[in-house]
Image 1 (tube, rainbow over the protein chains, first blue to last red):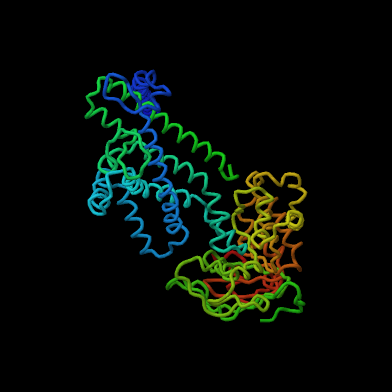
Image 2: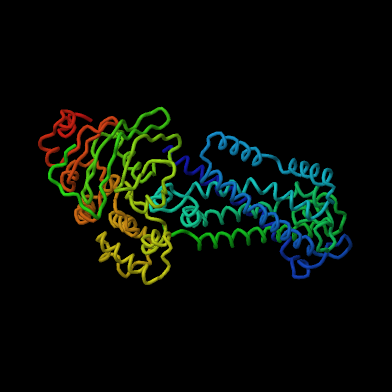
Length: 275
Length: 261
């Protein structure tokens, strides 16, 4: 009796969640999708009567998230390898894990403030795409470490033992057994980190600024889709702000979906032969 | 310690252990163990849980080094090769001394890639040579007839017993001289166990085999010599028949008759 009651509660909860989520998403897509066209993806935003576009924002998002990931994936993986494969000293592990958890739980708006202090106020970098990349990298780094640590600890220790017992060095064991076995989990984790980074806005407002013009430089300010969305819903006086925001939201959502879909596909393809 | 009239085989090396003590931090696991295993013979190591059997095995290929805070004292020689010391070439040692673990642990690769792993580490790239090595190793492990034509299948698609024989083939592929087996049948059904035991008998002569086992009948069936350990001490080592029928120590007799756990 008790079991069925709980079961019913769970079903009601699930249906409610799906309904609310579907309603929100449906509303956004309903409003936004008709505005999305190739022209919208290419043109610069407009505060005038025309709808304009999100060309620079799309480009900035891809460049900044791409560059920040390119910096943090090797660094994060290296730190995780140090932690899981070579970190035998208990003291080191304690310090490492504390730092990891602290960085993970730091609000990104605080990270933005820190980067502003160091990079822009301290090192006199301009408010720019470059500073934004550094900021995104700092936000992303602990997440990459986290997913890498999870992926590496998911590799059974018996694989390492078997490899060492066959005369492999620690390095070759890492290269030929541990990394191939962890690759699938790594790719899917990294995909989630990238998707999360695409929605990041707080850290970029202080560091990359809000600039809607099209440019290709590191040292000029530029906004991402998420920052643009924030701007549209807070500052913009454009007559089409609602439609622009909905359409931007849909594009961001599609982009995140695409990243997740592709990385999951790749992860599935890279899956080791044990399932 | 006398070992009866057994001839020492020349190809497979004998193993000499002199005053071996092993401790993890302040916990002593093995206490002043001295023994000789003649080449090409099968030594069964028996004793209650926690008596140091597995640690002894992991000293022979120095896998015991993975445990932090481990201290080893004494001497171990495999043939003329010194096992204990700071400057031992562990890669060379582990190519000489292969190991099979308690639970079958094939890599998440194909059957072929599992067996070819060791030879590839040693730099064998020629695909014909690799194929030959893999075939030979699988034949030696009596698995060839069951997996021929399926070498590209995942190792995980094999049954537990087949996986364990695959792990034996993988160990044999690097042409070791000594084979360490850490309770290799404890996770297997009786039929698979029988196959592994047959295999051990077939490997006798070509390899020096040290078999840690909880299964006393298994020790009696496959081994030439039996060593009984208790609380880190080597209590008794002798020809299996003698140890099982006329043990010299009362502790051995108590263990064999189930009066000591």
